[in-house]
Amino acid sequence: AQSVTQPDIHITVSEGASLELRCNYSYGATPYLFWYVQSPGQGLQLLLKYFSGDTLVQGIKGFEAEFKRSQSSFNLRKPSVHWSDAAEYFCAVGAGTASKLTFGTGTRLQVTL
Amino acid sequence: EAGVVQSPRYKIIEKKQPVAFWCNPISGHNTLYWYLQNLGQGPELLIRYENEEAVDDSQLPKDRFSAERLKGVDSTLKIQPAELGDSAVYLCASSRTGELFFGEGSRLTVL
Image (cartoon, rainbow over all chains, first blue to last red; front, side):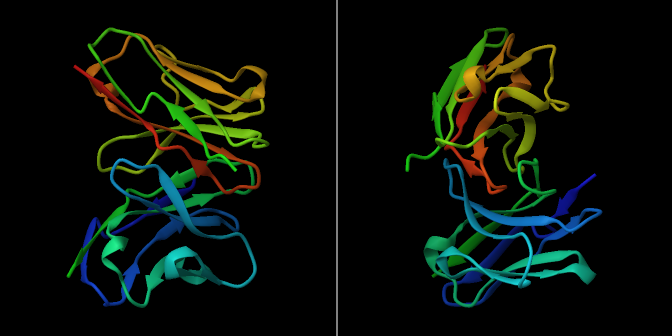
């Protein structure tokens, strides 16, 4: 069975500082990996995805993530955080197209000015 | 391109009452999902449709929950009767190539 672990429940960073959100997955084959962001009262918006190829993927809003098979990780990074980045971030793993996604429990990001 | 549309956005009912949620996926998306999101948690799959066929409903509590996707487009999720523990956000998503697009969700409060 596939699973996702996001070890950090809550992270606080200063505006302009760099950010890294951790994600570890469990899946028997090559996974499809995703990062979604959710603002309060809103649905989930896709930040980026990894299906195959280059292990460093670029997403929207200046985010990037790196797939490391040896570590079963797909950490999300941003070099300089903006106050508007404060939200809940979810990592997810899937088996392929038209399959279900399994989500982690999320990391709540707080940005201080 | 219109996104995934869900209604109602908010619903407050008393326990033991029925409730229904509606979802209109993105045009051309054959795969439709209903997810449950409890407060402070990640979404959990309830049911997945390929066109009109429910291909994964193993996590759907079938004693009180039901879903349908007539004609392979819109979908309805029903709870009857609702229990206090059903208070949550019900998210609908659709997909064509493995990337899920989510609606804004339907927030249910059971009193």
